[in-house]
Image (cartoon, rainbow, N blue to C red):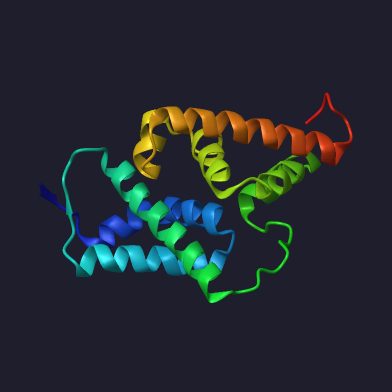
Length: 168
């Protein structure tokens, strides 16, 4: 087992990606920032050790995904009312800025949590099936079937929104 790099270096190298991951799962920038801060603080204060069984970024990503999912569950337990999503304001979305992207994001919101996570990790983040299976603690076959179902439901929702069955 190896020790983690110093916290400032770890935070500097991975903060941007960590925020992106948490925002995708939580769909709330403030809550995502809280989760990222909590994860890095926990890594530092608990003297967590990296065992080297997976890539360092995969290990950190798994911690962020789990923490984000736990935050979602806590939000639901507290009975917090979710407000309707405003158009995303992040720079990536503004750069794309087209109607199809907006339909995609809207359709993505209608997927179950598992389907949304698998589609996001595979199609938007580019992780492999084995990496996603490790991150979510699922068998690889379950990841593949969830991805297929998620994509099918996503395409159906996009076709319904546009009114054109041929054009997602």
